[in-house]
Length: 228
Image 1 (cartoon, rainbow, N blue to C red):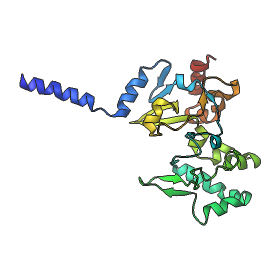
Image 2: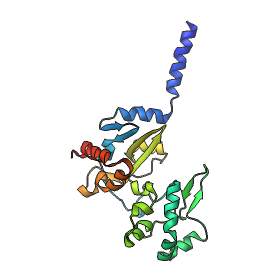
Image 3: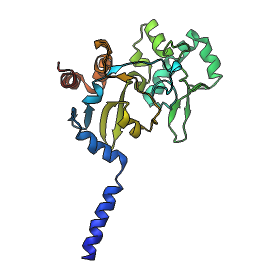
Image 4: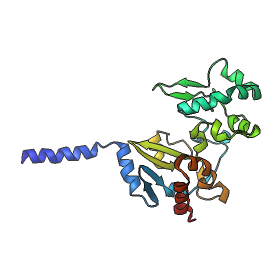
C-alpha cells in the first residue's frame, strides 16, 4: 500500500512539475478554432485578426517587432542582410555612423546571433520619424523582394511561430504566446479585432505564409478562418 501511495504521489508531482510549454500545447489543442496538420498547429482564433501598427515612437509599451527585444537571426537571415548591406550603407549614410565599424549583429549571452540595436533600443535598421524599415524601403525602391532581404521573423510579424519539441505553433503575439516567447507583459501586439479587409493578417501575410507552408495549407487556413 505504501508503494502504491508513493506511486500516486509521484504521478501527482510529475503532473505538477510539467513544463509550461507542455501545458501550453495541451491547452492550445483544446481551444476552439485550432486545427492541426501533422506537426503544424494553427491558432485560427488568434490569426483571425487585423494588423494595426500603432506608431511605437508615440506609445508605451512598445510592440514586439522593431524595438525593445533581441531579434535572433538565422544563418539565412545573416546571409540575406549581408548581401544587401553594402547597398544600404550607400543609400543611408547614417547607417555607417551607427555601425561605427561594427557588424549588424552580435553574439548574445546564449550564443545566438542577434540584430544590433541602437542606444534607444530600436532595431539598427528602423528609420527615425516613423518611416519604417530601412531594408524594406530600400528593397521596394530597387525592385528587390523584401521577403528575400529581411529576416524572416520580420517578414512574418505580426504572425509568430513557436517551435515546441517538434511541433510548430502558428499564432500571433497574445496573452498566451507572450508567456512562451518570454516577451514580457508590456510587449504590445500590433493586432486588433477589426480592420480593413486588406489588413487582415491572413491577407497581409499571404506571401510569407504560402512560402512557408505551401498554397494548399494556406488555402485551407483561409477557408477555416475567413470562410472562403
